Length: 185
Image 1 (spheres, rainbow, N blue to C red):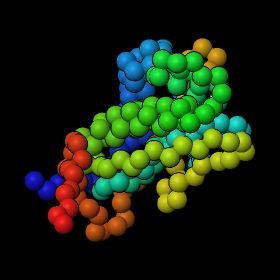
Image 2 (cartoon, rainbow, N blue to C red; image 1 turned 120 degrees about the horizontal axis):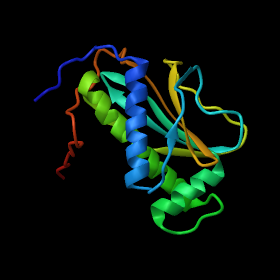
Image 3 (spheres, one colour; image 1 turned 60 degrees about the vertical axis):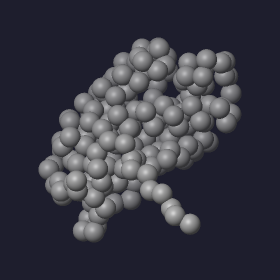
Image 4 (cartoon, rainbow, N blue to C red; image 1 turned 135 degrees about the vertical axis):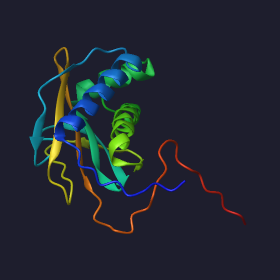
């Protein structure tokens, strides 16, 4: 069954609600950590010009954009320790992989919630960036819905930037699990 073009607008409040619900669910079920959501911000850029770890995922379909999770290195280590049930105190490959997985779960759950209104979307493989003095931007749609979260003294941001796809020949997707294609040789 082919998905029809969906052009319903979505409010920043609906995006914020999806971010909050997805983040709270992932943290309670997968990380056994309690986080508290702060007030939603709307901004032109995501991330900041300080040290940190950022995981980015692309969204594609009738609506396109980017989802992101960012935090300080100590919180990335804490999340990795909870997820992998091992102790991490410095950012290494395991911590970056754990950040990618946590972002994939959160942004994936947000995508699923938004699909009810926006139609089917694909989700890219996470890209994780670790360093200092950088800022992330999304070309095309400059507005981000940013929800800050805290867990004790640790802080992170989950953000989404999404807009209607201007490509009139957008691929039609089916909600749910991706359809795999086989190649005959």
